[in-house]
Image (cartoon, rainbow, N blue to C red; front, side, top):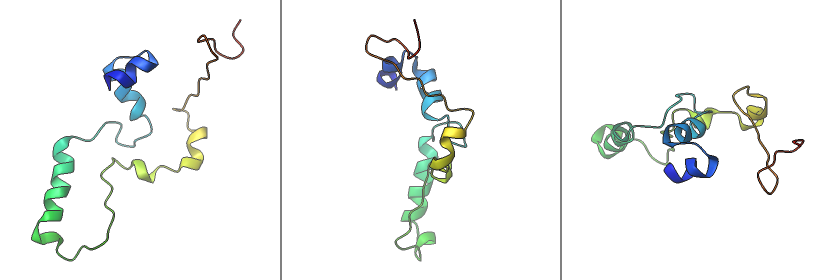
Length: 89
């Protein structure tokens, strides 16, 4: 996250905010949340589960990509070479 944030001029908290902006849970998964699903899949309780995809992504896969451009939380900032924004100057 530090490298991702550095490329965008934000710190680690800002980087997490950027990458989780469209995740309905608004946060990254905790390791224990992912581990709980893995543990369940390894248990006898999941013995009849076959060929299923179980997303552990805070409902990110439920986001309709076609509507992202209309989401008020989305902001596209294009920069030209030299860091100048279009229309600036």
